[in-house]
Image (tube, rainbow, N blue to C red; front, side, top):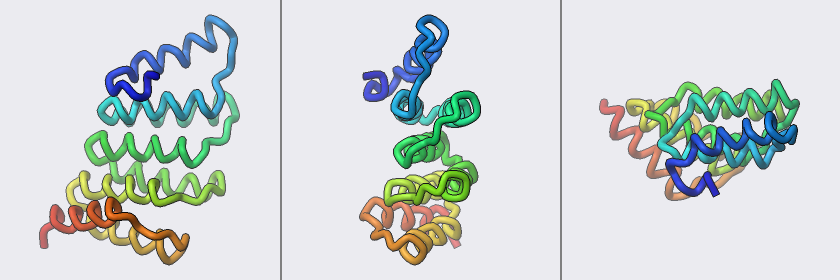
Length: 155
């Protein structure tokens, strides 16, 4: 419920803590994915989203899903175009966990490149990678983000 509200990311973080400390219930991948999604929907609270992503792996030994990564990448995108972090997450999900990015992963990362000051070279590189390396078909959202990156990149 907290992930849908937008401003309820603080409550989602509190619930993750409460379930562990008050009831000794370890959060699972779904708990973390929902909390990371709440951070994304709460205005791109990317620092908290990445903190949860690290905590779930390092503290609880959980393997994130593609949904977990998509929420974290989207938090980086909405948090002022944290494009370097978004690109790092695309790489991490593949190299560390052997999770192939999907169209949502790439669209969010391309949008982060666009919002991060028109990083059009990286945006177009991701657009090519998703098609050539992963055989994914871009959506209109993917193309719109890449086009906007080119527009914001000037030159």
